[in-house]
Image (tube, rainbow, N blue to C red; front, side, top):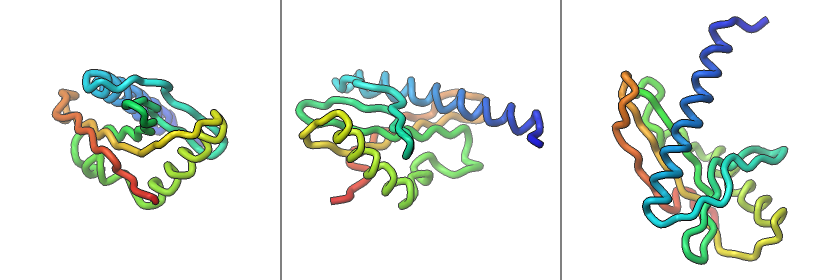
Length: 130
């Protein structure tokens, strides 16, 4: 039996994540990226943002944190998550029948405890799998 508190916490976390994805998308667009898709899902997982940068497709993992209790946003990109993102990139390009160069970037969004945006850092090639 789930508690109302954990459901509220989960809803809050999802809202924070969606907000972080919106901040990340605006940040990337300001750098000249074109957002192709948001929250692409398949049975194996989800890609937060799919963007186009020149001739390259960019799969973007967005990590948003409020405070450092759970560590820095970058620390959430574990080896397991990195492997999953590589798999998702392969599945995405296969499903869309794309033969393009692609990479996986990370956007780390960090807020202070009051919700003020502290930073939005874009890390290119955050996952190297070749």
